[in-house]
Image (tube, rainbow, N blue to C red; front, side, top):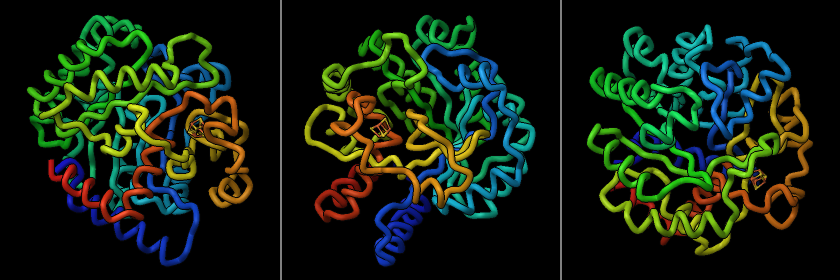
Length: 332
Ligand code: SF4
């Protein structure tokens, strides 16, 4: 199965509970960034730019767990920066497991060997390795020769030690789709449990002309999708339809709120108009209706999964046919 039975049950129960309470907006995934520090400086990443400008301190363990309790989201993506640099990572993961959260721990793989030596696998924990292409491409994007070999070694070792392993790939304007198919086939040979692919995040602060326009996303993902059969892709079929330009979807930025050392980021993972001190302030004070394609020029080309996968999930829960499609897809 692409999503474990435990995760599918948690998400369904959580959705039904919120629907019964008639809550209009609620988060599925908390994007938790305990640190902005990183041991790479990838093209296309705005956190490293933020950190070099602001030198933010890491979140404390209490702040991290407080954010998890405040949001109530059943899934927590621990990201950054490079979260393996976070000093309280072990305590944080233990706390998340105690709170019965499903955890996606993102990493660039450079430090994962020592992590998997010191930490035991858990059914609620997935390691999510960022891989942006085969060796030449990945090393160029990450700016560090040898980083592809390091991430591949990291994920092999994690699989060997019994961890559930996903990978995450960003598609840029320069991305060659044939190379991506070769990469995903290689990852399948390495027995990774899931492959996530998404248009690279078009951060405001990254001025380089490297991000895809909407029409280019449809073209690239159309080419890709035709060749993904048999690969353990984890993007939902509704989201892939959307990427291919088949149908519209409303952005739901509240579906994946971000908590980082500056506060609760408003409105979304990509745009920072302000920070709030609490999750309730974020939900109450953000003018959600002002954001999304057609409403804010910065959203024009955005098809990022953190904004639109929650929308895909919402659609599937509200339409039995879409739910059935999702169920069959999840069976693999
Ligand atoms: S469409 Fe949504 S996720 Fe994308 S930039 Fe706009 S508000 Fe953020």
